[in-house]
Length: 367
Ligand code: NAD
Ligand code: GLY
Image 1: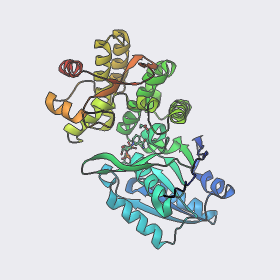
Image 2: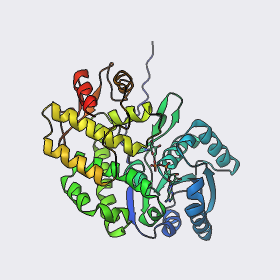
Image 3: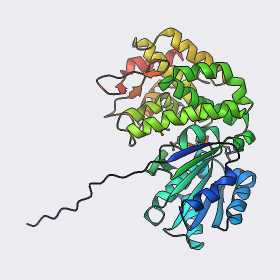
Image 4: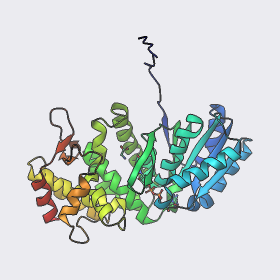
């Protein structure tokens, strides 16, 4: 028998910059041209963002004499599927895009996840630039390299880790968002405060109204802080073997509620209820103090996010759905729980904690 080893041990540098500011859209084409990122670009966006910012951005690329196409798909989570990916890939191939091309993901998390996944597999992987235009995408989905699509069997089940080449967050694009979308972003921002930053929690308590008034002098430092928190966690645990799981605070219960209510409530609403219920479990286990849970409760209410289930949930179905969660291990439900505002609980170096059914049942009953 002969054995040949293919040596692939390597150190890769996938570092990137997150640029946050005003009037950035104009600067993107020339900056990318200067950095020689690609020969041609596909701006991928959705039907809402296309008319507000897509057309402006492609004009800027054309002014800079860069070959660029604009591909738009119908807005909404329903488009985050294999069919959309195929349509985008065919458009790119038809336009002669190849290995020397790059993708610009212009939009919310749906666009970022689909466009990032297209980039991850097109010609076996090309670079992409995230240009988030929602608060959720600015503080969360544009950073960290998780890309993917939904399936009949669940959300985000097919995808790839593919880090962006750069992230440009132009806060002026956020001014066209509905207040409802700002609230969605606030749910994730409050999550960051709980997992890592008590000071930011206090800042949000004081400045909530200014966030709803799209004030750049508030939005920029808040987004920057959240990007630093997420960036730091991803640097330490890119593939979510342990620490990155803390980004899922509120999501184990949140995802189950979202799923059982057939996505009739938003993701932000469900993780708001999820954070409170998981906080109650932490309280029951003696991990979290009552005053911290009350402070979280008050901040979520101030943001206009729900803290109680809209209907009485079916406990059996909730438990069964949570067992399908990506963090569940051999049918046991695992959660990440806060120790106090700004710090997550850790047991023997592990952030995910196995939770006994009785604790979950108790917390859900109160909810
Ligand atoms: P979204 O992308 O559906 O955007 C929400 C709505 O806002 C859409 O109708 C969109 O057309 C519209 N919109 C976007 N920008 C706008 C603007 N500037 N002005 C006016 N309207 C605008 O939703 P989202 O909340 O941004 O993202 C949710 C998605 O992100 C989910 O699919 C979720 O799974 C994913 N996500 C991924 C990660 C990750 O790490 N990859 C993290 C969090 C969420
Ligand atoms: N949104 C969770 C993560 O990126 O890990």
